[in-house]
Length: 246
Image 1 (cartoon, rainbow, N blue to C red):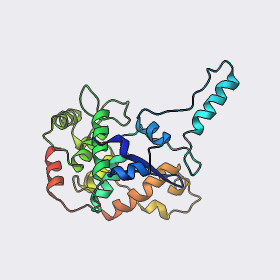
Image 2: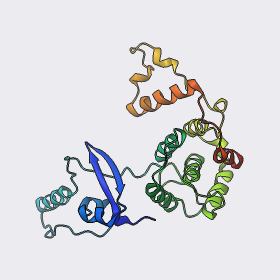
Image 3: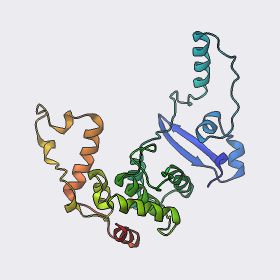
Image 4: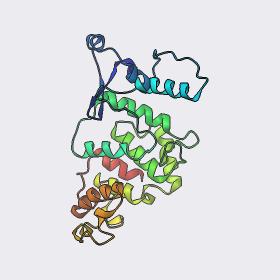
């Protein structure tokens, strides 16, 4: 666990980057703000409000409170908590492209994932309030291994046993098969095709991908391109060990 008082939020036109200040001098020059303490979960001092007795006063109090959470560029920052399958993709891409993970962010991500594991079986679901699934457990188990957690660490053994009881990673959904194939942990031949050719269809055809819901078409665009190339990162000791536990 890191020292939570050293985290600072950088905001650039809606883009959020958490920065860990290593020196005491930096911390003194840049005291932690209300917004930073609020989102990290540290004690904070806030404006005191009179107890509302009318709807109007309640609305005014709400406005005054949320005004404190407005960032310097005018928007309201917030956590994108809930889905347990998005962060693994970010870490997988960094791993595949050889990016060095930030050690402080890695520590907090490891702590977060173990805190979000289901108490009864140690696995993860599609959402942090959901029951354990093959998809959630395989993705987050792989993520933790990439972040350096040993496969023999007791919570990892518990999660792996749950994964095997659910059918192992071979039973994972297509999204998971895509990521595991890109990592070289699974074979592209084992997943349903993500054909890139539909992008060549005329736009007036209903199933032209550009006519789909934004999240669907955005995901399909990148995945279909990578699938067409069948690209996987070269095997290394870590990915070989992951292949052996499935």
